[in-house]
Structures are given as C-alpha cells and as structure tokens.
Length: 118
Image (tube, helix red, strand yellow):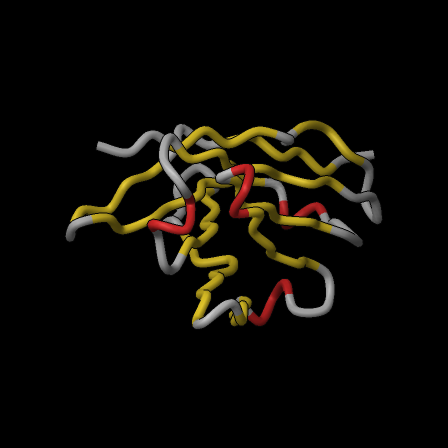
C-alpha cells in the first residue's frame, strides 16, 4: 500500500509561479517513474511530467504544453517529488495529481487545486 499526498496548490495570477509537492509514504526511490497529471472538470486526466531515475541520473519527460515552463524533480531523502510551475497561464488551472506504480498497482494522491486568475 502506498499513500501519496500532494500540496502546494493555490490561487496565483497569470505569469506567477507555484511549486507542488508529492510526499510518498515510503521511500520515493521505490518508485520509478513518478509522474504528475492534471484534470479539469469534464476533461480526461492528462499527463504533465514524469521523472525516471537510472543509476542516479534523472530523466524527465514533459508534455509539450508545459515545456520550458514546468520543471520536475525528486528528493530521495524527503520521499518527495516536486513540480515547479512558472509562467502559469489560465489554462494551467486544474487539480494536479501525482502517481506511481508499485508492484503493478497504480497509486494516486487526492490532488491539489491550482487556480490561475487575475
């Protein structure tokens, strides 16, 4: 069993920044990869970013719509994954979820709400 807790969401003006965190109930090094998704009402959950670590090298993949604006990282010691979001746009408003696959099961957090509005 794995618990994931996201935090860091909130209200931000267009052009602003937020850093989301995802804390895992066990060492985050157990999971490879760790990913962020987002969802808005009436839409499918969509991929945002994914980090995979191979022999201490982190490989990160981003959705095209966040490239150059978002940055994903992980802190093994804190069992935490981060999503740094810069230059936020109104269309980035969504509930953001982190997810891992462990022993063949996908685990999701409850999500954290990001609102981008002036």
